[in-house]
Length: 468
Image (cartoon, rainbow, N blue to C red; front, top):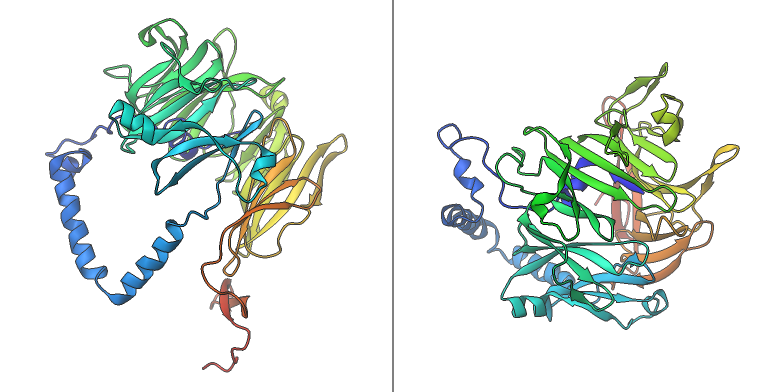
């Protein structure tokens, strides 16, 4: 499933770039000098402020005890190695004391089920930094369907927003000589096919927005210089940023352009083979999603259309072709109430899993499109208590999901679950304190206007409920 929230685009496809350009001149903004985030003067100022804070807050015994407890958790090698399915393998980016910058590694699902899986190193960033005398930090990898033999890997120097994109061969686990390469800039590359990519980057004067992101997206062919890439879309200088992507869902392949207007407003265009753009004419503030033939809209504002008004926070679905043809008939999959809100909606191959916060407790359900309409069912085996997270293992190929669960007394667990079957726990974080004899209770405090505010209490079972 493709979801087009501006925040996600800027954090993912567009997490690349040079230092943002200051919009205001120093004579009108006395803090503009802080825009030079790597400059000696701003860094010295930051160090001075940190020293003041540490002197006031970090010298107490309570702080030192808390710091030691937090370090024990963060430095533990027992953390869960979360994975991403790419082809037949499950990939994980891992950092520990021996791998400061990290290793990108892979294993099989059968091996991952083991307590101590055997991992195959694909890319060792510490070794790469040593060989290239660099300080690369991992950003992301975009691997090309269907054989996943080529990947576009984004790396930044020292963890900056700016990064480069380099083409990588998964089979030989090596960089492609004379492959696709994007110099350091905000922006990114996105596969269309083996010899074609979309590119958003700094193309020179006037090509970036005032937010510091690319305002143009281009189509770039292998074997040609990036400067020869053809224009796909040009936004306005006051936009947040522009990016073009390819949806590689089998049978529903399509190209899209996303014009990010602000952090939570965007326009989405379908790009035809002739280069013509067709806007998906939904509210800019709605979070738009595409999965196969379906268009989902999660509304941030009320929307009156087709003679009906849909509430802010509602999740709507319709067939994309019908919507593009002008029809405005929606199935309402979720409507918020005074106590509920939608935490997430995750497509698998054939189902949509809703994660709803109900009085700040997660509740999972499964929605399935059928010839008779959308059918709702329970998510089998979902914990009744705790914070839950759900994401598809591979929304194109299976109905499996990753399920994470944690509560105040139970360490985080990672399970895999096929829709309709009980989850299989794969990994569990260690317990860093003894939770035996403790209980969790939810209560409500009622305000003067009658609003019930939920809160939780964790206590010993033996605690006397006498107010002492």
